[in-house]
Structure formats: structure tokens, C-alpha cells
Length: 345
Image 1 (tube, helix red, strand yellow):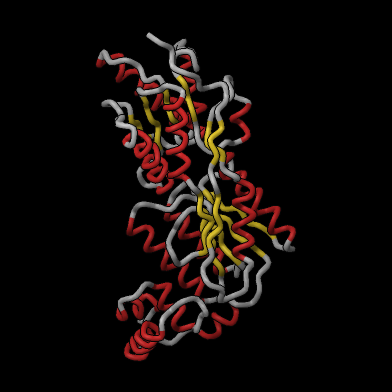
Image 2: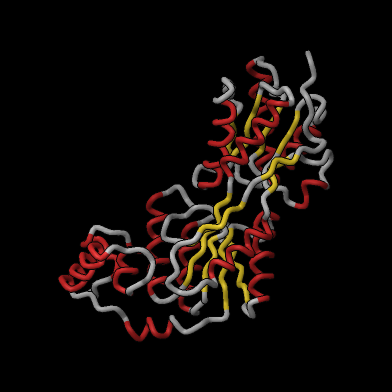
């Protein structure tokens, strides 16, 4: 069996991306000591780079691949629009691939884009919390980068990639503080699945905002759901049922960590005849176009979705060998009609 780059990385005790940079003479930061260690491992194992494949892959492609969970989700739709617009201005074609948040489909897509010599890959879906899944993806991306491809991540996926750093955690903390300033003390949270790093980051931000003011979530007031309308509605139903069955007061504010989930929460509250914001305030996250069309208009955390996609393309088209770069995507709290001061009992 042929020796792989992964074999060399393990032998040298370095990451696959570091091994790739060391063997390719990249200008990105690899110390001479590490480079020598990797070269020694390659020689000891008899590793031979596939020079013809490298030459073919380094030919300039005209496609930028965009990997996201679901193009029908307005969050990802906004990012895809930004990538498409910026790619078109550069004379390139953007190819959008929906993976449904499945790392196996994402791995297949990376390999397919690599085989078709895509010039760059934008990782617009969430990073995964599963270590084994992330390692497989990182290995495939390292091989792609070794052969001339560029990778840009929207949200942190690791130091190996240029990154559009989305302020998910600090945005969630700011939203929590804003609701506290309205007078809210009893909170419930609808968060995303544990496999998604973005859900972890946003939940951490809310919990930080509560903890720093001496508040905590009551039993059953934290519910996980897929970032979908149906998931948000089901999670809201569970929150209301827990409060009724335990005889505890309803929360005065519900934070849904995506606007789509918040739309589902509003639907469930409407179905049960619970006034928003008269009895319960609801806030979301992302500020998708739908947020202003809901009744009542949704308070949320605004992310510059289109600009995030444009920034990803700018990073992808930088000079080969440039040092890792990070573009900031700041979050802004926007309060609308779905939130108000809690009613005094």
C-alpha cells in the first residue's frame, strides 16, 4: 500500500496540514525544525508526492464550491448569495452543495470538488463537534490544499484555514443582556443540535450572559432542536408543557438560537393563545429577511450574511502561500416588536 501524507503526519507527530505545508515549501508559517522533522519522516517512510496530480490540481479552476447545510434555509441562502455575487465579479462560477449537516455527505462533496479541480472550497456549514468526523474532513481538505486548492471557513474550523470569524458567542451574550435590560429574569432557550459547533457557541454566549448576572435556567427551560421551523415549534411546546406539568411560572423571554426556530416558537405560542410579547417575549438569531415579516416582527441578532459570503471569496482569491487571514463578522442586537418589558404579575 502506498504511503500517504497522513502516514507522514502521524510519523512526524504533526497535523496533516502542517505536513502538507512543510513538504510543499509553503510560505505559511512552519518552522524549519518542523519542516526538517516532516521531511525526515517522509524519507523514512518512502513517501512520494503524486507530482502529476499536483500539477493538474494546481491549474487554475473556474469554480468555487460552497458547502452548506440547506440552501433553502435563509441563513445559508444569504451566504450563498454573497459567495455567488463575489465569485461572479471575479469571473468565477459558484457551485452550491447542500449536505443536510451530514459530515459523510460533506466529505463526499469535498472529494468531488477536488476531483473537478475547484479553485476553492468555502465551508459555510457549521463545524462539527464530533472529533472523528472533523478529522476525516480535515484530512480530505489537507490533501486538497496540498494539491493547490484553497479552503475558507465561515465560523472557526481550525487554524489550518482562512476564516470568516462569526461572533456567535458574543452576539448571544449581548442579546441576553438586552433582554435583561428590559426586565426579564425567567428565560428559556431553544438551541441547536450538539453536533453543530455554532449551536454550542451561541448557547455558551447565552449561559455566560445569565451567569454573569446571577441567573440560571430552570429545569426543562433548555431544549435542543434542529434549526428548523418544526424543531422550534416542538421545542416551544416542550417548554410550555414542562412549565404546566411542574406548576412553575412560564418564562418571560424565550431565546431561539436561529430565526427559523424562533418562527416555529411563535407559531406554537399563537396556537396556544399566548400573547407575544404580552405574556412571553421571543428573540431569534441571524436576522434573515423573514424576521421582519413575522407577526410580531422578530427581535434578533443581525449577522452580515451576504457580506460573510463575499469575505469568504476575498480570502479564497488571495495570493497562494499567504499567511492565514481572519475576517471578522460582527453581530448586532436588533430589538423589534416580539420583545418588550415583562408584564408585572
